[in-house]
Image (spheres, rainbow, N blue to C red):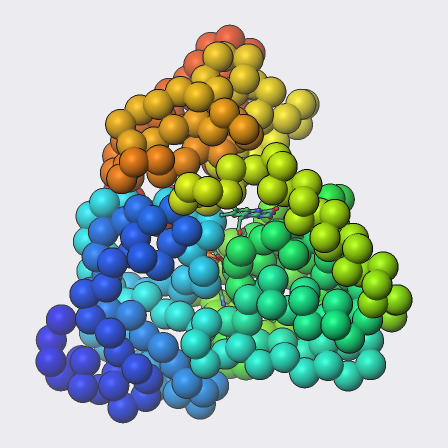
Length: 300
Ligand SMILES: Cc1cc2nc3c(=O)[nH]c(=O)nc-3n(C[C@H](O)[C@H](O)[C@H](O)COP(=O)(O)OP(=O)(O)OC[C@H]3O[C@@H](n4cnc5c(N)ncnc54)[C@H](O)[C@@H]3O)c2cc1C
């Protein structure tokens, strides 16, 4: 990328050049991004976005990359990451104000230590607060929409608090998926006081359940397919006989067949071919359209 652009951006944030997206995602797949930006403060955002706009540089915010399948090709643009400098958490009675780059697991542990209940479902979700809000991440019949009071957003030069209702949460969706240029900067989360020991026990039970049911020893992006209206995605994948199916370096997990693992240096192409094969077979056998839960990034 042009030296002048790098110099301009460097005045407002840390800039890293030629960074592998594979290293920024839990699936460990993806080409190289031209630049990665680590903003340090809110006031640096306006000039950063002005430089990107002036130079027609596309950008993408990435949290922990735990819900992304990046293509193998290079991304000629900027990745923006908040997980270095936007990680503060402020606890005030039952209200937590947290920055978007904080790990949702770290937040759930802090809440537990303070005897605050509501975030237990997050304890095994390896994302940031921003990514969890964007996805309305959830588990065990709870999700972000149940605990979010409001979300702090930056877009078009404006800083704004959106109410829970404004976020239009649904099953793994939120208003942010229709406004991918918006930057989630933080949130207020409502929790309730509870005995620390009870919260710890619940989190421990869930951790054990995850360990028993999920293949956590290989890179993945969690569940690959959303559950369709009827039944569970894994049942259909099992039904077409794809449990344990291998394609190149990608493997449908034996333990949980809605997880496709990067078992042996899979390329994005191989991974996607397996995803598409499953979709086609499920459609053919059950007349059900499976939709991916993870997001495809930097594909044509
Ligand atoms: C082992 C494993 C288990 C998982 N279990 C679950 C589970 O139980 N439930 C569940 O719901 N998910 C689960 N996931 C998926 C994933 O962890 C969640 O969706 C998580 O919330 C994604 O957060 P992230 O920070 O990694 O987002 P990323 O994957 O980095 O990004 C996802 C999307 O959010 C956007 N985004 C991220 N941060 C911001 C921001 N600050 N502002 C605007 N947009 C932003 C990105 O641009 C992208 O479009 C699992 C994944 C793995 C690997």
